[in-house]
Length: 211
Image 1 (tube, rainbow, N blue to C red):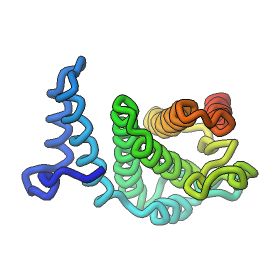
Image 2 (image 1 turned 60 degrees about the vertical axis):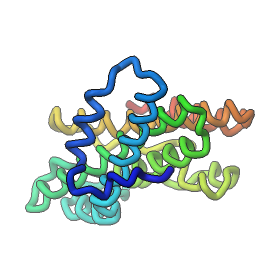
Image 3 (image 1 turned 135 degrees about the vertical axis):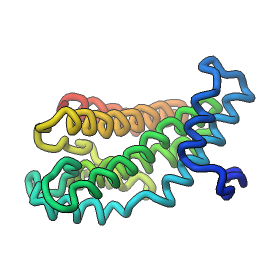
């Protein structure tokens, strides 16, 4: 979806877009729904420009010495000189991921399946890279190239959080991941691709069972 031209205006930033989104009625008509979709697309564009590279996030996480079974995990509350920057970048990446989920819901409400699928797949890729890098599985052999970032097991949760902030943070990442999986399940169900829809369902249920 093309981003509205007003995004290039210096008067628009994430805070402005959030304020406009908050003013939209909860029970929205077609016009309000279209406005919401464009605002969310604009927010995704702005956040994508400022979101940190995920390789940088993983390197910063590894520098804190926090690992799980040999794979890097995100630890926004880790001790060390980079903890503040890591937490800030993590929040920014999470905001982008959650905004994409909202945009997916808008696309689904208008039966824009290709756009919804594209955003949902990006959410899954983001969640896996930030929360944890899971092992590859046989699912990759059965799905199209665009789906090659998925696995049947889903992302593994970080070690048990030590603070309330970590707990909320991890729960938000997992919620975004499962929302994207639910969307992909709905998309492939409507397309009549039952086998792939079943894979998305199993991944979602497997992730929820680990919580």
